[in-house]
Amino acid sequence: MTITILDGGMGQELLRRGHRGKQGLWSAQALLDAPDVVADVHRTYIDVGARVITTNTYSTVPSYLGKAGMADRYVELASLAARIARDVASAASVPVKVAGSVPPLDESYRFDLVSADAVAMPIYESLIRALDPHVDLFLCETMSCIREARNGASAACNQARGRKPVWISWTLAEEPGAGLRSGESIADAVRALEHLPIAAFLFNCTTPAAIEQGIIELRPLTDKPIGGYANLLHIPAGWTLDNRAVPTGFRKSTPDEYVAQATRWIDLGATIIGGCCGIGPDYIRALSTHLATPEQ
Image 1: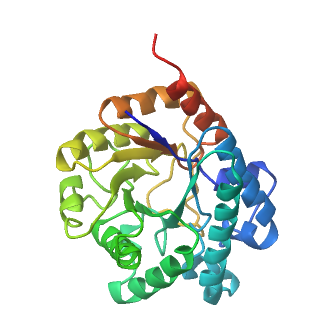
Image 2 (image 1 turned 120 degrees about the horizontal axis):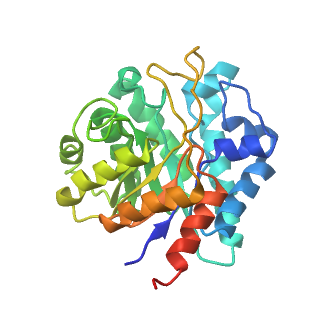
Image 3 (image 1 turned 30 degrees about the vertical axis):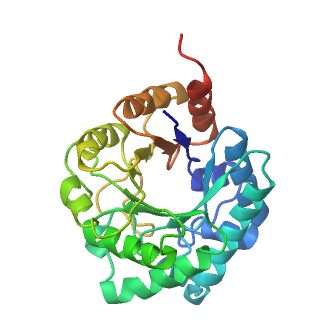
């Protein structure tokens, strides 16, 4: 069985390299101030074994950029982020694909803040058109509810028109088995996308335990590739980038522990594995090394 290894989180790696963006702009600030650092993060993930890198477009959306009066620059910055990733992938000594991140348009996990369809769709369409010339696939990630996922995936599939794969990745409730962040079931979420040519189904930006249970529920629902990329950051209910509900810290997990968790996902049928917030190069290296080591 071939396992596709994704990269890990971008934001914490930018912080580790000394780039601390403004709160509202988050990782998009690095595209303005330190594009070379963004490129270096991509290269590091490739060096440790990732064969899919994700564009730094998670916060190149009007809601975040608007906090600095730059809402109208989201297409420009998304295109820049995609070009950076493409250039790094093209220069790599191994085959590397670029996934165009299609993120929530408002706040992560906040299904209650998802924009009306009439507002969301034109933004998604513009964002995806900006990514298209530079990416190999579209990754609609951290989708917190059925409607958010349907909007992002519909826009991506309409643009891709069968030329490029579209992956969907939902974020799950922290409690294993509780469905999406919205409380909607995984079965209903899959069913809502049956009319679209989704190439892979994943879960991300939640606990490893929630992803494990999610994979158990997802496997009988599809014959498409499935997978996951968990986070280490604990986010309280009601969190946004700007409010006072602050993250309560990182869950303790060593790279070896994360590999053990990811191995269970693989045993359950996952073939696409990576990392989200807090999962850095050491974790991806450990995962890559483990998968490359013949079983005794």
